[in-house]
Image (tube, rainbow, N blue to C red; front, side):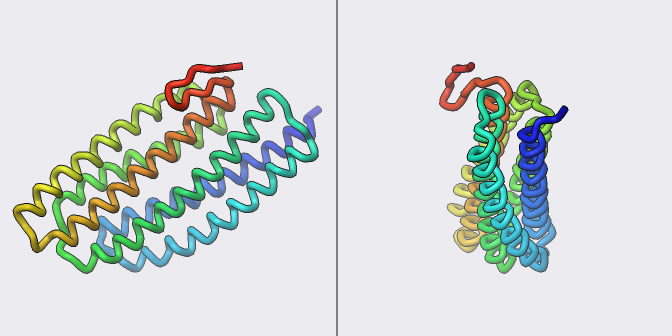
Length: 221
């Protein structure tokens, strides 16, 4: 017989997946607007962020209700705590997508730079990280979550390359300073998106193994 707690945890997971879907959509629209130079897609991102914010509150309320009424322990408690943390990361990812939208709006009024191709690569990695981290959470796949940590290094490497190339480009092409700074800001936001996806992967590992690997930790229970 299924426990009431199991049903409520499943509902919290369902809500998290809906919210994650909105984040993935916002990320996709931001990337399409930038690479396709299509400012009309930027309006969608602000609407999506409103939905993400609404889901953020709804999930917090759902988890707090479970904690208050069911008093979960051990693995169940870890899962609820992880959902609360994932919820926060997803909300911040929505903010990051909005930041990208604002900066893209400025960038689209300027000359297109070839370094935008590196932003495209960053986006592909980040979108994969987001999807895979949530898939691992639903499946309870701590092993799969560990592979996401390596992907974050790829995102960081490309961000550093964007910074290096654009700094050199600005020295030689002072007229492109504004466009270069826009891309640097966008790359920084994609890097932060990767960091949040990494946080989610770490939460998955904690939820299903009890191991807290943040800051190199190896504790478990």
